[in-house]
Length: 361
Image 1: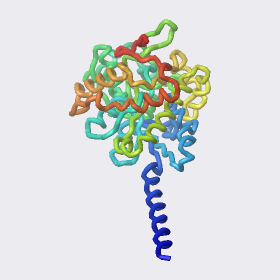
Image 2 (image 1 turned 120 degrees about the horizontal axis):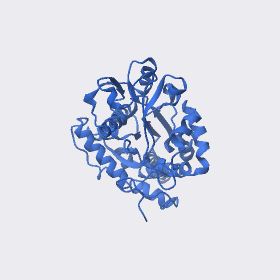
Image 3 (image 1 turned 30 degrees about the vertical axis):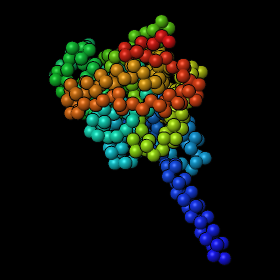
């Protein structure tokens, strides 16, 4: 009888150990911080394969069989809000533009770069409809709006530099995108970087500057001299505990990047993205001149590395960070490389050199 009791106790102990081991193997939930939100703070975004993963429920589909909950956080406060959430242990992954990514790293946030979430895209500098300005120089001494702490702060600095100007030539105030658009409509600011389409349709604003990359042999725009690649990262603690989950997570996103890069899915994406509150015409205007493989380009190639290093140097130059950031030991490309191999996509996207030109294989 004692032997039977001991055997039962041993089996129960083994079961408990097995349950504890399983509990440690998978997280209860996967939490993503997205450094943007839809119109009016709507918890849906657009214009990336990250948005497509969310809108198509692909992560939920992948992890449903494991009982892992997927939690998406959309931050109207953009990159700084994502940094705050990560520092407070509220998110495991994050989607960032270059400046907040770099600021977070420089202040000690521990994360690893997994893949790029896109390259290229247009930049518009917009002024009130009644503005008499013909160039940026005409706005010297005027009030410009910029969402400080976000990648748009570097966009504006680069745009001004291209025109021989600096922030010191203007009065710069910080506003989020929605406040800036309202201020444009009321004439309370003299210019900002924003999407022009709905403002122009209402007759309250107009484009002063429109910047794209150089056109290639097929007439498609290349990388933009003002923008930088966007990034998806994972917290070091999560990656250390759940590398198998990180791999499956990356596989989902790279599969979505491939779907998003296929020309046959262009119109479907535009329609999906209207759930963010923007219009189909907005996406037609912003995307039709581009190769989808560039806009949804996930590779951590020479261009990504060079552009991120440039953003670090600019952040130091403009006094936006105090501590230097090493890019080379920040990258964790193994998950991306594994995903490309597993999905048969190793040669699908063409790597770009440091200047954004395709690398001949």
